[in-house]
Length: 131
Image (cartoon, rainbow, N blue to C red; front, side):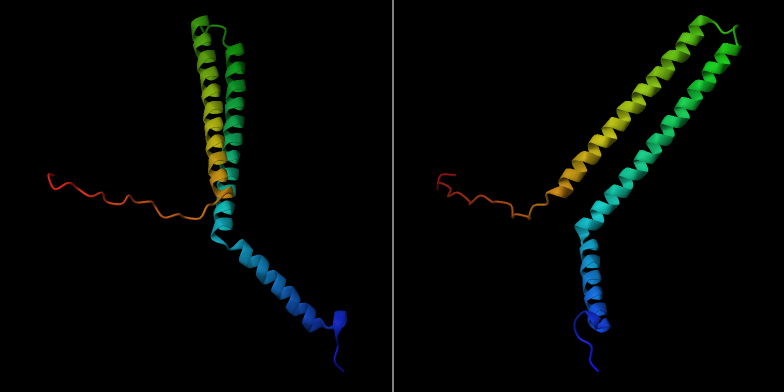
C-alpha cells in the first residue's frame, strides 16, 4: 500500500527538511551572519552600559550616605565631589550616545548593500610633442 497526499510521512518529512535547509542557508549568508554579530555586539555594549549606570548610581548613593554621616567634611570638598559625580554622569551619557550613533551607522551600512562597481579610470591624454 502506497500512501499519497497528506498521509505520506516521507513526502512531508522531505518537504520539512527542504524548508529547514532553505532557512539555514538564509541564516548562513555572510550578510546575515554579520548582522547577527553586530546585534550581539550591540546587546553586549547595552548590557555593559546598563551595568555601568547601576554601578555609578549605587556609588553615588553610597557617597551621599557617607557625606550625610560626616559633618566634618568641608563644603568645598562636598562641592568638588558633586561636580565630579555630575561630570562622570555626563561623560557616561555622552559616550553611550556616541556608541549608539556608531551602531546606527553600522546597521545602515548593512541594510543597503550595494554591488561593487569598478573604479572609473581616466583615459590617458595625448601629450604635445613639445612636452
